[in-house]
Image (cartoon, rainbow over all chains, first blue to last red; front, top):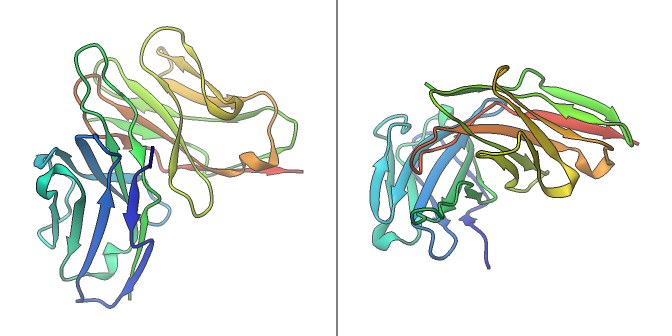
Length: 118
Length: 114
């Protein structure tokens, strides 16, 4: 089966511009997560979708970040306007929702999008 | 609040020698523990997990990890390191319930020298 895919792999933009990152989860995975790693730091949680609904967006740094998952399939993460501190690698992960007794515990990660804001 | 500590930024080991990458955690209740690996220009790959049961967990590529509840540790080990094991390793924890997000450590870079 195809894994989690992310586009683009690398984006370089100027401060103040807008960038949209895309994530295609593994087919059938209802859980979709966005994470970010700033250089040398921990990978930090941004938000969690269950199907098309935002389950938890407590990790979103501010209102310049907007995530959507229309139709419960792929997701986009828009940064507008971008600031220097937004640079980092943005990871998407997905997992099945699981039914009682067969919960999938691990998350499957995409290759990440490296965002550089200059 | 959950947290993960990986005390070593870098671990160097000679090929053929055993390796250990350390991880300690803090979580309320019983933890779900994970190790992921990131090879250059690749995404995070799942290595192994501890959910319940035996404290020694075996995973991909010959890696294993030992859950120690009293020391709140989940160190990653391999009996004989390969040069191809050189990568960035992340330990992560999740609270016991629900499809909650992972909390990661900052990563440990493993360098295996031929």
